[in-house]
Amino acid sequence: MRKIFKLSGLLRLMFLTLLAVVIFNNCSPETYKESTDETLNITEYLKDNTDQYSLFLEILDITGYSEFMNTYGTYTLFLPTNGAVDNYMTDIGVSSLKDVPLEDLQELAKLHILAEKFETRSFTDGKIATPSMQGQFIITGATNTSEGSSITVNKEALITQSNIEVGNGIIHVIDKTLRVAVKTLTETIESDASLSIFTEAIKATGWYDKLNQPVTYDQDSVSSHLSVIAQTDEVFMKAGFNNFEELKARYSHLNEPTNPEDSLNLYVAYRILPGLNYLADLAVTPTMLTKAPLEVISIKLASDSLLINEETFNGVFEKGVEINRPPSDVTASNGVVHFVKDNFFIKKRLPAPVYFEPSDQPEFRQLSSVYGVPGMSASLSDDELADVTWEGSPSVTYECFDLSSSSRPAWHGDVFDILRLRDSYINNIEFTTPVIIKGQYKVWISYRRNGKAPSSVRTYFNDEPLARLFDFTEWGDSQTPERVLESQGYKRHITPYTTRYNSKLLGVITVETTGRHKIRLESLTGSGGNSWIDVIEFRPIDMDQLYPKFEAGGDGLIYEGEE
Image 1 (tube, helix red, strand yellow):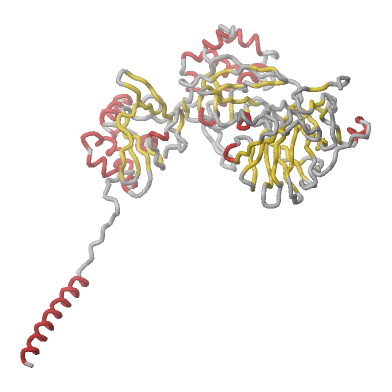
Image 2 (cartoon, rainbow, N blue to C red; image 1 turned 135 degrees about the vertical axis):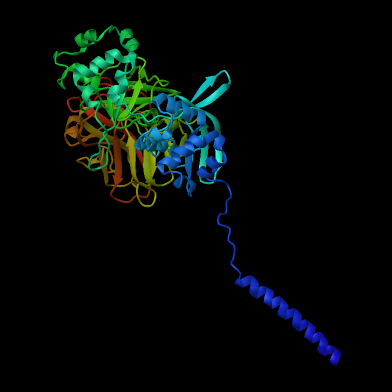
């Protein structure tokens, strides 16, 4: 028994010792890892590389920005080397960064920082989507040198080292300090020797002062930035204008250039666009308003070219004017300047009919095995169609009918097929129209009747409701005399005709500006089947509304007396 007792005492001592160790450890201060990522933040990285970046670190210290650049976040820093900052000080005539006004230094620092992370692979030939913290945009591009291809920043600096990962973002090293654009549009234009004729034009028309104003914001926070499409002297001379006086003689029909109704004033105003529109913005905007009242320019992206006013009107192709991309995207304090390769002017056009087939979408046209092939169809999603948007069903359908069935004619033989407009499939659907010249028009919708389609549909043009509803279930009328039928708001739009198709007048619209517009269909009743749209017509109010008709199953226009 004694032996057993001694053994128990030993175990008891070991237990007490272990307990003491545990208690001691639990009572000692616990050391936490303050960060899950030991990668240096931007400020720490600069401190760790002072041999290269001490001067930009000094800029951050003077401005008080070094602290927030050391905090958590996702930033992009375009980091100038010490040599780049030295050159900046030489350019402005100071020997120390402390001699630079604090406000200027703050603006300079913020210009190099974006509050979002951008790797070089996301750069395009143009502006970065997010502005700098200073407010101006950063422009990137590509350039070829004897040492190979490089990425440019704001057209001057080269990225010498890219995509350096730090704890709170990414760094791109540049060989020049970026400069805040302080010149106004007027000063930017006037300082360019190649724009002497254009400078005289903005002075003579009064736009000189308007392009020299600082940026303001209205009650809706919309800025007063402007975008100018400038023409060099070379472009003017190519168009036959060797000096401003020759330009004035050609365009100033009232001989009062400051008069907003004078043709020269309109000529200049047509080159000025409201808003801050870089090339990247123009590339995704089909039409742009101008400062010429109710006038727009159209923009088309063709391969890598941006074309102004390249359109087809009434079957006639009109060649556009190319924007000169390399020198464009010049940032001013109150806007941006672009350049064109040729002269252009406002085209005075009278209202002309537009026969819009919703099925004629570029994405459907690219399906060569389907588009225009009888008996074929294809469906595309909202993401795949640039000019059609809708709510609900994941796709809409292009359908080219088998023309062997006489009951299924349509112009070109095809329709835009919407599956069950409303009732859990497609609700509102909106189309972008072709270019419509400003003026007054009657709007007609022509469709193939379906008894299971919605019986009450409202149409909107640029968000304004049209006067009359229409019914996808309504049969066409082959008996009533056509002029009587027209007076009732109906017509037979195709020939040869079948009552499976109907065409209804939706109302009269006023198109305020020449350009592409929006037309939307909104179903007010449920449906259990497809809605097939053939043509939406915009006919000038003084035009014959019955002729020309459309060739059923073909691409022709049938004029009165040809049936």
